[in-house]
Length: 95
Image (cartoon, rainbow, N blue to C red):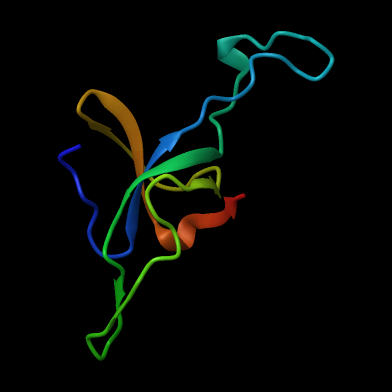
């Protein structure tokens, strides 16, 4: 990948949602919501404070994360649909 986010931003690939419900009902594409789970593809160096110090990010490439429904900006990098968001938009890391 030829893209590296700046500062406290991360590049995220959405993880596809399940095609069926727990009861076995198949969900059509038109009724699916965009998943709120993703994998960090790349992360910036960290946030810069007012005194010039850089505090590193808590997430790193390969982490599975949860983020808000309307978080991030959709971009196309190397033909793949990805999201760029600030680390503060990330709700948590999945273990």
